[in-house]
Length: 229
Image (cartoon, rainbow, N blue to C red; front, side, top):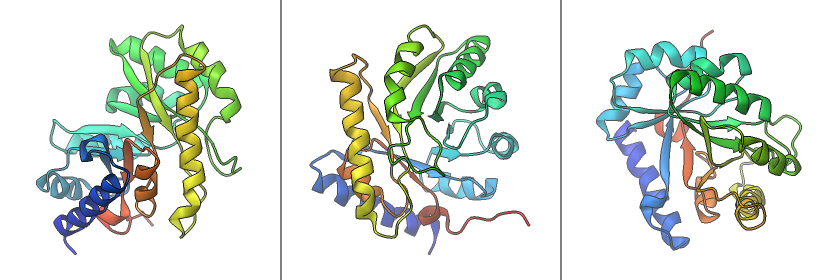
């Protein structure tokens, strides 16, 4: 299938999920996950009307972004090392995957140096899966309180990744738990957050039904990833 056909199928799925959840389509942003794909694919996606792209490695994204047209919005969605915070702030409009106060402080320092405020999501390991990055849910309140002393980052939401399963329904408890955690941030701790970054190609309908505001879709849009040998 062509990129346009892939996008049309994804849009149909998003619209059906939004309708089922009684949500407006514009409540959900599609982050086109372009990691491992070359700039030509980005331009092809642009021709289909996409402007928001997600990358997961700073070293891969830097040359790619420089080869792509300006005016695109880039989000960092992978695990970020503290020593790459400065470059990430330079390259990306938003960072989805901050998982410690130390990393948040590094992003804040880099953003302050750059003279900007960087929006971030806190990645929470809701499932407790050992192989996953993310802050334990029990540590979230302390991180949010620590962030009140930082003025060059804005915590706008939460992000999570459920354990892999071909059955998308198995991700629902994880997505529902993240939504509940966001509600707790607001109602109990006084930190209103607007974004929930959750859901990928195989399970984003369930994520939308559970409140996702940003879904991260790669393979169903771009096809199989192309890794260097």
